Length: 145
Length: 149
Length: 226
Picture 1 (cartoon, rainbow over the protein chains, first blue to last red):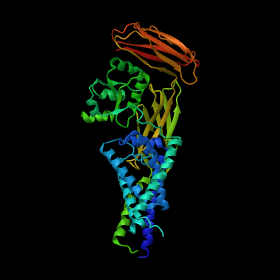
Picture 2: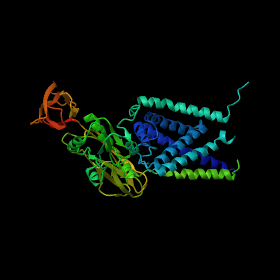
Picture 3: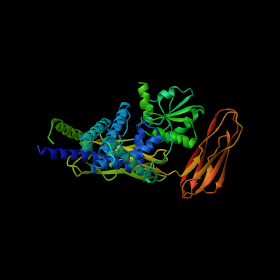
Picture 4: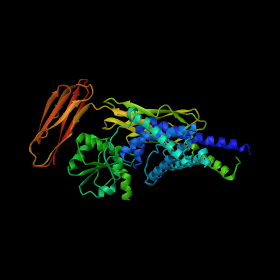
């Protein structure tokens, strides 16, 4: 029984590294090319143009700060909650694009990167969101309530 | 006497606000200093896109322009459309001008949402000929086929 | 803390969920020298070519299943489709310029058998210099309008000098036209006046511009009465 605790700790750390690492990588790709990311958001045809530009600049930085918070375990529950919210928004946007049969690039990992299959992107956003919620529930300040 | 610690919910909300605010600072700086920052505008640059249901409500005469390849045009096109693409712009432009009327709304289409030829042709008509009332058909030929199977 | 069933299942769920997006990290094993090529064409060129080099840096043979350009004006070809580990290849792209000018960007999507649902996007960015700027190219009068003159300004782009500029004869009988220098060698005005605006007219004027380096360009202006 004593061996289970380290195993659980390791498992949670692997989850944190995967979640934080994925979001950090995605954020850096989009920070490098904000205009290209704005073009990808525009293709979803969900937001007015000024909001698209603002989001293209802001969202990658929020992703980066949240992933850093998860990895550094500072403000971790808040970062996980924000990541889960972002994944929820991505899920809705991607599902909406899929339902409307839009032929677009997800834009999740940058404009020219290989991630154009919508069903896969939808499943991934759902998985990441659920993982974030799972880690959120395991956070000490939340699990002790 | 020490203040009671904030409830976990309040703490989470406070930390979330901190993260949201912290991310705002580099985002604003990037919008100003990033070498590849998007150019700010209130409306989307390029020609306005319209869909078929909007077009059917217009009373003005319409002038359809097909910006696809000659082969695609020969196979099938919107009835009455004129072929005008950038491959043979100089050769095709006179024919468009023969039939164009100043009071007509011009709608340019290409294959689908992924194709940018319609925007290119529409912008070139605006720039070179100073024409107004030019629109691009959203989803292009794909949307026409969907409505006219 | 004892391992309870809920704790165990939560951890298991975490592993399953992370496994769902592990393929995100399994990026194609084709390593590209560059995914973006920038070219500037010369006035006499009809095509722009760019070669995208890659190496199979993985341990398995990769088959390129699809190479598609965003425009019918661009072709993308491969010598073969299967590449052994360590083998290099290239995708040759040929963009037919047609009558295009200015900045052009064409994308080429590449799909391999490793991940059939994902694609790599290559970008060919071509700058086609516009030697001559002339606007507006379309001069319109309404039926019944006064016989006022309208002007098109013709100017050399960048550092080119115009050596000669002449109107192609014979001129259409429906209009009178005059070329006037604004800045010799750089900018000219083409002043056009219709002979009549009582009926529909559709004619064009052509001029030939020869630059100091002996290259030449035609410009065509359309004149309508509607």
